[in-house]
Amino acid sequence: MKTLRLLLVVVFVAFGVVSCEYTFWVPEEVLVIPDANDPDAEQISFAQTIQPIFTSNCVSCHGGAQLPDLSEGKAFASINSSRYINTSSPEESRIFSYTNPDTDSHSQKKYTAAQAAYVLGWITQGAKNN
Image (cartoon, rainbow, N blue to C red; front, top):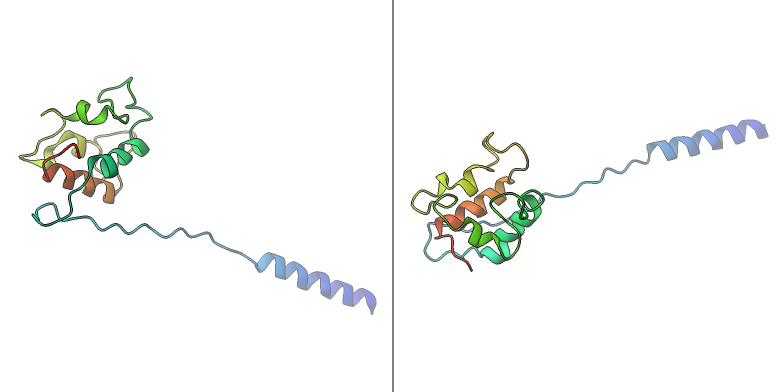
C-alpha cells in the first residue's frame, strides 16, 4: 500500500512538472509613426530616432570601414548627399530603399517595417540633422 501511494505521488509530481510550461512572449512594440505629409505632424528627429536605427542595424558593418559610415556623429555627414538621400522622391533614397524590408537588395540586415517607415518619414520631412 505504501508503495502504491509513493508511486501515485511520484506520478502526480511528474505530471505536474511536465505540464508546467511557460511560453515567453514579448509583445511587439507598437510605434506611432508621424504622418510625414502632415505639416502639423511631429518632426522625426535624426539624433533620437534615425541614428538609433542605424546603430542597432547598420554600424556592425558600416561603422567606418565600409561606406557610408553610419556610426554616431558621422552618419548624417556620410549620407547627406544625393547618392543616399533623394528628398524629391524619398522612396528612391538609397538609405531607405536598399535596406527596405520589402526588397532583396541588401543581403545582410534590413529595417523592420516600423524602422523603414521612420526613415522614409524622416526623408519626406526633409532629412534634417535634428
